[in-house]
Length: 108
Image (cartoon, rainbow, N blue to C red; front, side, top):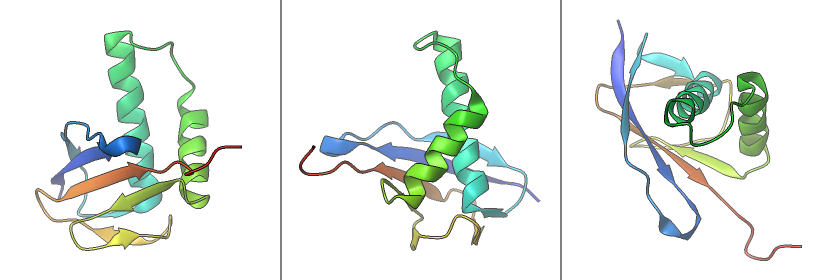
């Protein structure tokens, strides 16, 4: 049985993107698959708006996974911070998953 959840982005500086509803095929998913779904959804939206040139979905997903592994991306559920790409996540209808992009305090 599927479930509808919301994806929301938090960006450096405290900017919060609008939540978008996403229908998932099952109530259980790996964090890896959730990140993939989030990235591909953004690429589709950009293509529709023609806001950016088309990107290779596989590369973009791999970059997001690498960003998560490097601690530059956090993913939060209503009850926890997720820390393992291959762990299973139990989702409830209406859950909001927050994707928080981190940047270093000092560059260089």
